[in-house]
Length: 174
Image (cartoon, rainbow, N blue to C red; front, side, top):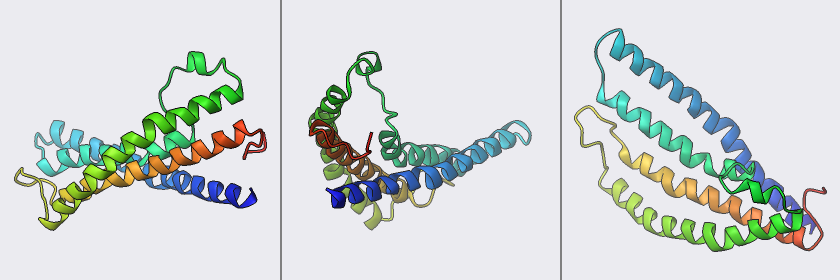
């Protein structure tokens, strides 16, 4: 059990680090890009396709790479009005079944369909179709399977934690 606990804690740290450092840095960069676009548009009366595309590329990166971090911190949407009234074991059942029935199948579908899509985009060197757009569109596409893999990893860890709660041996000692 100690080995499982160490593995879970180590895996949690991966999403914690990505959310705390990579995604947080991307949010700061996102704000700078938006601010720059506003200044360019309203002060200098100009805009660049590259900057506009960069906005939604960085937003997509934040959203996808932050999904596992959000799941780690129990921030995904659910009907908390019922969930919050349940005891810890019922919550564990909800989490376990949610991972098993919804998260794993949806992540599987996304991963099996996007990995080949990303490989093709990389092989052809996919770029923006707009003149002056982002030159490496395949990099954004690559964040889709990576983000879903991180969310799947965190979901599997949630399922393991839930099983231990159901067994009366929670991994977080609470």
